[in-house]
Length: 373
Image (cartoon, rainbow, N blue to C red):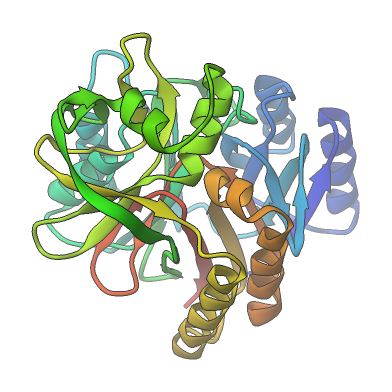
């Protein structure tokens, strides 16, 4: 496998890149494509279709290309692998819960390969990333390599989408499954956010919607501690920098970031926040969070030294909190493996923590290594 990557500022420019690839003798079968929603996603998919290239695509809140952070662009990775070692399927979410969609993906993946490795991207602001993960794992009946993220929309918080060569949906999940006997997927989720303040109790919640914390409207609790006025966009932005650190019954914790606020002062999170859960606010401890992530990635590199390509899922809230320092993380990933890399800033990430099985996260950085065995 000899992957190649490119970035573009328009759909027309993508056409030129694909024509040049063809002239150079490249024969890609699959493209991993991440695009700002400012571009025509349907038209973008159609261009790859004309070149007989399948697409695993998602809208973004910023794009990542090798060691660079982009905005309003399109990034793509071209893979020249046999069509017998991967399969793509769009799972629409109409009249289905996120858990049901996840279960459908897992049941499908079992029929495609006996040793599947999955990459998924979800469109839709109401998608529950944790339920998607739980659905896939429950249907599989075991842990499998599973990575991905929730699509973004440049922080407009209006509509996120996933797309293939022929379909675009803002209510569904695009799944890419590899034959794990031939292709390897490995990765890990890094965070570094620290819990601060006193423990609070989620007193009313339903799935990923939190209505009350300590018997007060969720938004009012945030306003007590964070001064963001009445601007809903500013509220989501600042609240995203101070997510909830959710304590699990097994002693582990996971971060949950809000990305929309309802008129009744409830807050919609990217993953489930159970009623009765104990939570604290979280915050980034500054530049040390970047140093810690780079140190952990270096240790991970020692365990998984080789890769043909890297796909990077990084939380948009992480980008907002770290500012220009996020480029140091991206550059470190690229330098460690020194292979073609594309990625995007997400509204939630999927991958295993350093210890444990696959989970849904916020505020993490998830490098995914792709290689031929």
